[in-house]
Image (cartoon, rainbow, N blue to C red; front, side, top):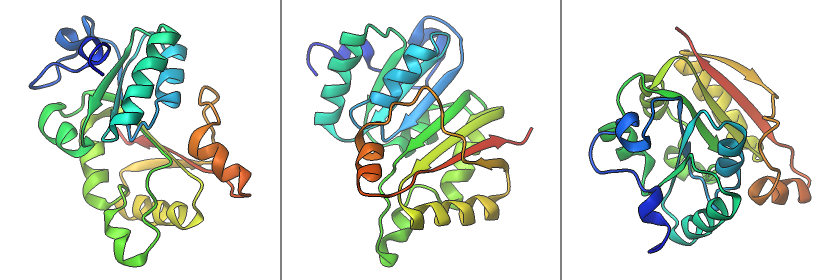
Length: 195
């Protein structure tokens, strides 16, 4: 963290791509990036984009920083913290090409369902930060969360939703591999913001 984070951290204040990244290409935010395998793979496959990987788990961030350094990806940036304040306070409306949410905490108990990331207020926030035609990608190996996503996305109505398209660039490790080992299937949602 001490050695690698300073070179990949976002500058304080509003996120201005030209200042933060030294260029103005597509910006992608991955929420809950864990140890960073998907974020690093996306950054490697899309050198024209700048990827902001957001997570609160410090050991995962440390692993991601080391892996990104080893992979030599120069377009991955790291925000250790909560995604909601970042999106609300620092990301300008209409400025993101995509938001990725892979294998979020399913909060399986009914009384905890309100803690799930996919809710009306978060969908509204994400939609406001995406450029027209921007994409929200969601993947989960929990059937109840997939159904929750279907219901929330249908109620929100601002996205054209296609199910079942797995991004070819995303590695199948971490939570995805664990879910598949336990016989669970993965639900994929590609949600394109209506212009």
